[in-house]
Amino acid sequence: MNQSNSPTFRGSILIVDDSQNNLSLLDRILSKRGYKVRVASSGKFALEAVELAQPDLILLDIMMPDMDGYEVCSRLKAEERTRGIPVIFLSALVEVADKVKGFSVGGVDYITKPFEPTEVVARVENQLRMRELELQLREKNTMLRREIAYREQAEVETRLLLETTKFQKEQIEELLLNILPKPIADRLQDRQSIIADSFADVSVLFADLVGFTSFASNKTASETVKLLNQIFSQFDQLSIQHGLEKIKTIGDAYMVVGGLPEPSANHAEAIALMALDMQTAVARFNVKNNQNFSLRIGINIGSVVAGVIGLTKFSYDLWGDTVNVANRMESNGIPGEIQVTEAVYERLKDKFSFKKTRYYRG
Image (cartoon, rainbow, N blue to C red):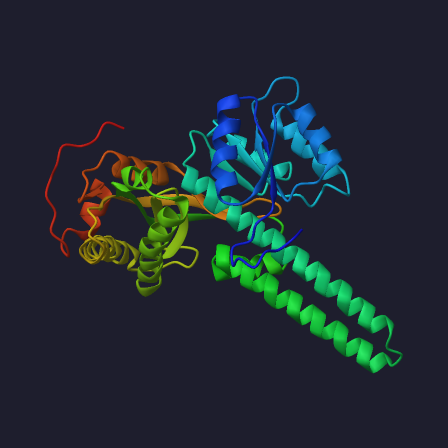
């Protein structure tokens, strides 16, 4: 895998989809970013393309005739020479079971259709950075092993091995902490095979950046991702400040939760303060950058199940009706407003001001 002088890593990508429109759109999006793109219209052609030249990343549709994406991925992971190629599934299937199946056969990420180009670019760049780091670590390991081979003294050999192990451990810890809460990362490093916990009382917040889609349609991918990163970085700082846990971003949506993975007595108040601070942050951003974005926010309180899914790219996520209702509160809310459930109102009515609105249709 070659590296350029650009700070952004570039590589080769194989796009597999039986839709010519999707192939053309993804080819155009990624080629403009400097990636070397090849396309395949079926699972059979995809396997033949990989046999001819291994890509650095595969974007793989699931629902294809003759051979679906699950089978293609399984065959790739069964071969030693293709096992390490990261596979991102691109599918209209949105059920949790479909996503879990994708991860179980070796996928590293999952993007639902219809996709946002900015999300595709961001996830592709993230996986290629991970891939680049993995290859760098392999190269460093190879170099260290060669150096050790030329040394005769056992003491020097032992020291180099210890340094290699320490370096790898630090890199793994850093990568895990970038995508998982520390308590969860610690449990993974202790080789706990299944991480799944029930939480009886947590606060869940969904926020959507209203006006971003129209903004992105008139901007380059670089400008779009740069602006979104500026806003979400402020949200990340606020989540740390309020003792909350960022779960994920999906396009221009942001999800944060309070009360897990470590229980907290004041998670509901913290999530409410976070919501207010997010609105303030967006308002200040608008003034500074001459924009007109607003936030649509939904909050709910209740029980959830939380756990880690994935084999080669871990993801800490939440499931349950509490999450679904919080999401609907956001999607059916009013731009610039914070819509909460009755459970949130009852918990916080003595500390915050509320106004009653017509309830959404769930």
